[in-house]
Length: 86
Image (cartoon, rainbow, N blue to C red; front, side, top):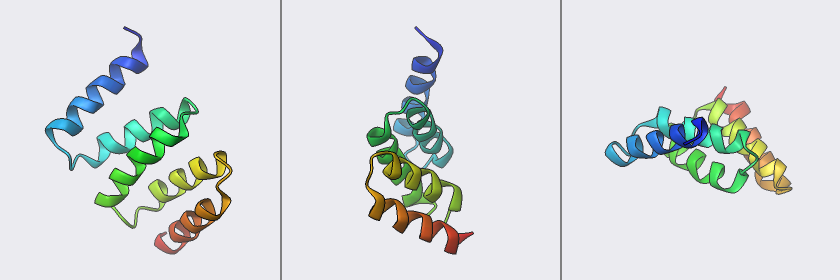
């Protein structure tokens, strides 16, 4: 099994055991974002942001995902939220 897949599986186990593990949600989102898989990344960022709603880094990263998907209104909204949260 390749390293990213191992990490993803381990992280998914972590969030299954502890749905409030914000670090695991965030790392899952980052792994998917780095792979250019923006839609699943957004799903994981949403879970992390539910736990830390004013985290500027999470909001920014999710905004970048929306920007990559050419959903500019949503991206701008998140980046503005991140700026206010920072």
